[in-house]
Length: 309
Image 1 (tube, one colour):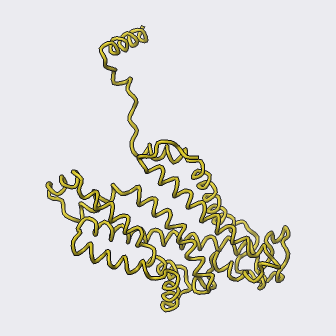
Image 2 (cartoon, one colour; image 1 turned 90 degrees about the vertical axis):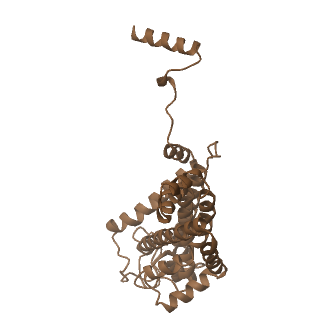
Image 3 (cartoon, helix red, strand yellow; image 1 turned 45 degrees about the vertical axis):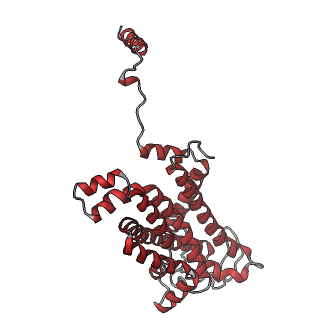
């Protein structure tokens, strides 16, 4: 009987040109729409699964792996076997444990660089875009100055000057040359958002500059901030590898994928497993993070209607 009454009510409402409230689709929040679009991006989801697998292996496998990355008592240049799947290095270290340790440090450095560069870039960009005038000109000129400096060359010099070798020194040096693209993108968005009605309303209510920037502007830029922070991780992985490959990055007893590749570069022709093991992991990390960034960009783009593969 209840179903019949509900059907009659629906037909009556349809005849009047209106629909009952419970017949209308429930509106989705912006977060749910972004998540739905990202989950339908097949390449981004596959990349996320691969990256999570790499992280889990690099963190959990050393706990159960039988060889320590510090143990150098094994035969030099042992061939790949069940005992040593990737062989051993010239100094008698198990290559699998070296790759695992290098992956940990490379990801740690890249994540640190991404966080620091994003914070610096967002603060400078948002302040410049909102205040404009002299502040904008000063920050923009500093940003342009850093952009024209060769990143790897400057990072190599700073790493040498500040006694580089530990992972956090390398991360700080790379962060100093990674914030500029984020600052420029954030500045452009802040200039656009500062003309919106909600910013005028915040000014009228007596909100100060700091509150308007960090409570109104920055939350409305979360899409571009998330995408650029993700891509900064991939860029930091490659930058750290390049710095370590020329011998000015991470130093012993720490290690990274770039340093492992450097130590075994001479064996590329005779013992390719020693070179291609860390190299493939490095490429996989960079590719997966870039694909995840592409998926996030499409998910946050309101003009993107069709789900990409």
